Amino acid sequence: MRGFITLLRKELAAYFVSPVAYMVLLACSLVIGFSFWFWVNYFVTNNIKEVTVFYAMYNGFFFWFTLIIMCPILTMRIFSEEFKMGTIEMLMTAPVREWEVVLAKYFATLLFFSIAWSPALLNTAWMHFASPEKIQISWGMILLPNLCLLLIGGFYLAIGIFTSVLTQNQIVSAILSFAMIFVLFCVGFLANGKADQSTQDLIEYFSVMSQMDTYSKGILTSRPIVFYLSGITFFLFLTQRVLLMKRLKA
Amino acid sequence: MIQVKDFTKKYAGFTAVKNINFEVKAGEIVGFLGPNGAGKSTTMKVLAGYLPPTEGSVKVAGFDVVKDSIEVRRRIGYMPENMPLYTDMRVEEYLRFRARLKGVTSKKIKERVEEVKNRCSLKDVERKIIGTLSKGYRQRVGLADAMVHDPELLILDEPTIGLDPHQIRSVRDLIKDLGKHHTILLSTHILSEVEMTCNRVIIINRGKIEASDTVDNLTKLVRGGGAIKVEVQAMSSLAKDKLMALPDVDDVEVLTDSEWSQIKVFPKNGSDIRDTVYGLIRNEGWGLRHFNREGASLEDVFVELTQD
Figure 1 (cartoon, rainbow over the protein chains, first blue to last red):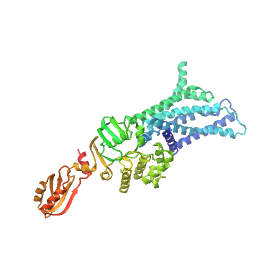
Figure 2: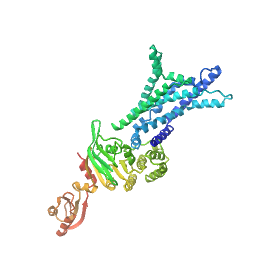
Figure 3: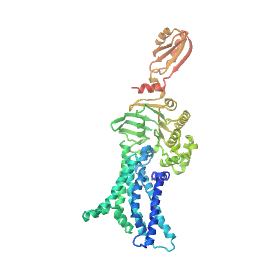
Figure 4: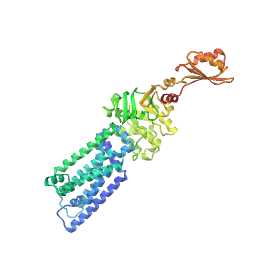
C-alpha cells in the first residue's frame, strides 16, 4: 500500500514536468471552453430547453475526437519509457509488487485525465454562481455524463497502459492503443446496419455513443458500469501479467 | 548472506551461467571478476531478485530470490551497470522517492537522505535535475540510492565505471568504509581496486567459476607468485646451479649476466623460500645488493584463469 501511494505521487508529479501533458491539458481546455461557450450561447439565443449543455458538449464530434486521441497520448510512455531507459530494473528491484506498480500508474493517469476534463464541471459551477437568477439544476444530468466520461476514459486508459507494457517504443504503443480504441469505438456504428433486432440490441450494448446518449439524458443504467469496470480490470490484469512475464521469462 | 547452489541461467538458446556454486558470508567484501560476457551482471541481476534462476537455488539472507523476492529486495541495495535513473527528477527528490519506496519510515527519510548525500558528496548537486548531471555524479546518485535504506547487502555492478581517478579513489574509500557494517559484492574491471578493497575474489569465466579465494592465495596459484629477484656478485652459471639445488625451488632464470647478475628464483607452488635463498648467498659469501620477493599481481591471475 505504501509502495502504491509513493509511486502514485511520483507518477502524477511526472505528468506535470512533461511537455506532452501540458499540450493535452491545453487542447482539452480549448475544446471544452469553446464548446461550452458555443452551446450556452446557442441555447440561450434559440431558447432550447429539451437538452442540457452537457448533452450537446459530450455527444459531439470534437468531444469524441479529443477523447480518442488523448488516451493513447497520455498512456504511451507509462511503461515503454521505463523499459527503454532501463529504469524498470531499478523499480522492480525495490520492494514493490507488480500490481502496486500497475495500479499506481493507472490511477495517476486517471487522476490526470480527470484534471484535464475538470473545466467542464468548473464552467457549470461558475455559470451557476455567476448568473443573477438561480437556474434549477438537475444533478443527474450534470453528473451522469461525467461519470460516463470517467468510465469510458478509464477503459481507454487501461487499454493504453496495456499496450505500453508490450513495447519499449512509445510511438508503437500509441498506435496500438489508438487502433484498439478506435475499433471499439466504431463497433457502435454497426448498429445502423441491416441486422435483425436482437443483433442490433447486442451492438447497442457496446456502443459508447448510445451509452453516453443515455447517461446525458440523466438516465442511470448499470450495464456500462459493469462493462467498463470489468474491462478495466481485465486490461490491468493483463498488464500485470505481461510485466511479470517480461521479467521472469527474460 | 548469499548462498548460490547449482545456479544456472539460460536466456533463449544461450546459457549465460552454468551450474555455479558460491557463498558470501555476512561482513565480507567480495570482488566479482570476469571478462565481459562472463555472466557477472546476470548473476547480480538474479541476486537482486530481478531475474529468476533457470535452475538451482539462490538465497539472500536466508530468503529465496524467487519465492520471497520482496523480502530479498528489502535487504539489498542494488546498483545496476549503466545506472538507469529518472532523468527528469531532481537528485534530492529522487533519493527521497527511492527511500520511501524502499520502506524507510517517514521520520527517518530526511536523516537517511542527508547521510547518503554527504557520503557520496552529492550536497552541491541536490537541487539539480538528474538528466543534466555528468556521468560521475549519476554514478554517485546510483550508489546513494543503493544504500539509502541501509541494506544488509550491497550488490554493486561496476560502481567505478566512468569515474575520474579522484572519484574512483573516493568511491573505493567509501566501499571500504561501508564494508565495516555491510556485506558487499562488487564487480569491476579495475583489478587494483579489488586488491585494495576486497577480502575475497570470485573469478568467473564463460558462466563458470574459475577461482574463489583471497587475493593472497590466488596470487600463489600462478607461476611467478612469490618469486624472488636477487642481484648478486657471482658467476651467473654457478649461482644458477647452486640455487637450483635448493629445496622447494622450481626454476631459476638469469636476467642479466655481468659482474652483478640479476637472477629470478621461482618457488614450488607458492612456498616461501626467502630464508633458504638468503642462507645460500651468505654461505657462499656473494655480494648482495638487491633482494625482493615479487608477488604475482591479481592481473596475472586474472589473465591466466580467463584466457582461452
